[in-house]
Image (cartoon, rainbow over all chains, first blue to last red; front, side):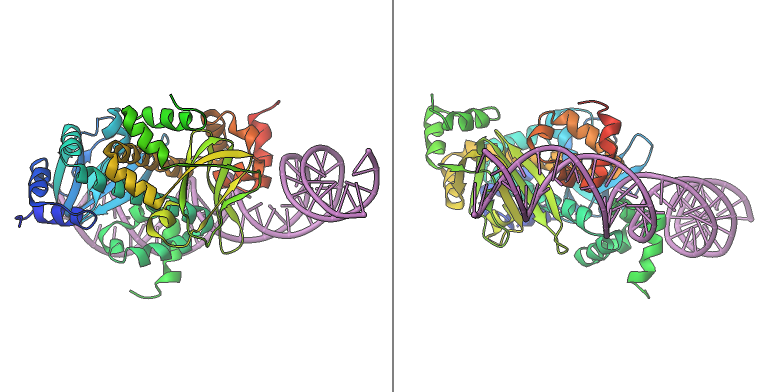
Amino acid sequence: MFPHPYLPLVQNISRHVLLTEAEQQHIVRQFRYRRVRKRQLILQAGDRCLVESFVVAGALKCSITDLRGVEHVLYFAVDDWWAADHASFLGGTPATWDIEATEDSELLQIDYAGTQALYEAVPTYERFSRIMFQRAYTALQERIFGIYSLTAEQRYTAFLQKYPNMSQRFAQKHIASFLGVTPEYLSKIRPHIEPFS
Amino acid sequence: MFPHPYLPLVQNISRHVLLTEAEQQHIVRQFRYRRVRKRQLILQAGDRCLVESFVVAGALKCSITDLRGVEHVLYFAVDDWWAADHASFLGGTPATWDIEATEDSELLQIDYAGTQALYEAVPTYERFSRIMFQRAYTALQERIFGIYSLTAEQRYTAFLQKYPNMSQRFAQKHIASFLGVTPEYLSKIRPHIEPFS
DNA sequence: CGCGACGTTGATTTGCCTCAACGATTGTGG
DNA sequence: CCACAATCGTTGAGGCAAATCAACGTCGCG
């Protein structure tokens, strides 16, 4: 088996496709290990997004800042998730996202050439990639439906149920932003949902 | 080359990957041609979504109806687009979407076994699929950002710019739903944007 | 310790919704 | 081919969810 930090990566992929020993070796070789500190910017809007990051441990926050200077959190990536501004990563255009570590984190990163090499050499990895994007896509459709059909209070409740531990790991204002409400308003509806705690 | 209706499909795929003659044959063979009439339901919530549809000509509307009976349009699929409730198609679960033809349409449909067979036999088709889902995923991230950072008026303006001909092909109330506002409110902001026409 | 970011609370405003009424258009059965 | 019903888009009055602005206590951190 693989030593940390590669084991979680191989396990993550193996949950969706079956890999031979040789394929596992091939995949692992394309990833570079990197530690980052809390508050460190993995990606800054304007730069090119050069890597996809797999989160071995820790927590990242992906967000866009709009023209008025308001930050909008697109998603959180904790252990076992992936993060990248794919529009920039794939198109070579300047990134519009910031990606910031909100905890000290361990990442495994793959660059564009690495992904292309893997897609050629290990078709199973391309299958894995397809499956991941299909799932991510359907999850976003779900999320848009939630935005359109639920109140802020209902979205917050659903968020707590779906990600029970996230509310402890991320700042309230970032959760508010993810849900599409202001921090002030989230603060006001929170007592209705968790009378204690 | 291929006769109608297969030519548009092959051209659509060829915009993203390079196919040999044999691969094209293989792909085309998995699709079944189907005509549908205006108002016909391609997919009804509760049924299983058994096919992915490529729109050769015509127009489809994909939507979910929430618990209060309000319809939310997820997207429109016109010529050269794809449509399916992928959560149901992939997971075998009951569909939550309706897909309805809003014009007489011509479709090419592929079932689940067909996609799996193609992924095995034509890796290039799986690559195409990966690329499509990557693009669809990034487009949805864009859309969520728009919902969070723009007013209804700005979203409508952006919609008109991005899809100039859609406003003629779909009912106002469905465009309103897609944008996440009520038909009444869209009607009120419309004059601000198109003083004439 | 003192600064700055965070969460909270209150007063006020506003973008958008709800409900209702009305022509105009579409579609349908006789 | 016409009359009737149904649906659509529009307009107005009123209401509500959530934003904005501002003030204040608390906490983490240099």
